[in-house]
Image 1 (tube, rainbow, N blue to C red):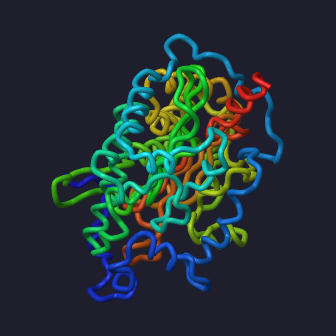
Image 2 (image 1 turned 90 degrees about the vertical axis):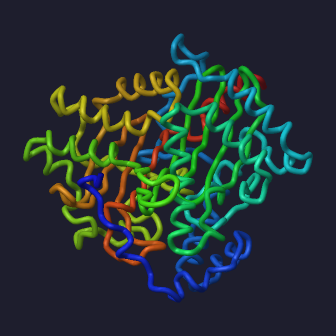
Image 3 (image 1 turned 30 degrees about the horizontal axis):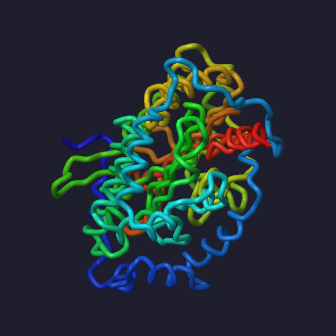
Length: 418
């Protein structure tokens, strides 16, 4: 069945022999990595802008440049909010046992290593952090995915794995299986797996990046990037797989409940590429996203309509939107984060860029002291279109004010043991 938001993506395929595709065939991930760095190219410009940023001392995303203190006290998880620590420990040990000694050495980093901040969502491998799954054995790949599965909710694992499956499907569709594959992803483990001490893992590659940390039975998963071009598989063994309809619909549901005055507040720009935008508002790689890769310390001012001014029904719709992102978390940590978001809901903001009619493309952001989520419709990368389409979706989630990568908790843990 065709979803009402569908756009046939195959009409945008490059013709056979087009250099956008042809010039990349036969390159492996490491060869393409060098090609992507070339000065004067689109990808080279992205690398040059992003590469120095990961070395900056981590502070965290803020709305005004000042960290709000006391948002993330380190304490054991509340009853009913615990992370699946036992299952994660077992899966991590199986992964280590499955890897060779050399692979274990490459896989592991200190819990506060700067390598956390090397994740990225483009298809080119800017940093080769951890193990590149496409070059490991089937057993190592499966063990890494089993750790991801043990850590996330069922829906969260399905979404994350779907991004990988869709990436492989895109590679088949455009004839670039060499750089767009189901396992064209890096995986790393941070810290020493333990029941109480902080540790976690990182998975990243094209259209998928997940950073997970647990400590004292608590869990945070951020930053998270999930995206897809296209957002559906229309052929092959996974035909019918679709992603992001819930997040897209949740955004339009919120807008439909706003009064005319509230909508005027929420809509920052009426067009997805608007002449009123200041220079740089649309980034060549991130487009409208503000909290993407290498933006760990970015100042993102609040904008849009304050959620505290909305009626109860509309606030419930905003929370429902947030829940479409938070459901990646297992039940206990998801419950904890929703509670945390609720405590700051009145001081949160919802903003919108683009059209509000059925079928329109758009960007939205929910931003609070304890959570940022974004959704954006994007232009073509491996399909040929320069106007954003509904089938190319990017979504982001961050924990601002210092707890991306669980860093606020890690620092408190370390300070308690000085």
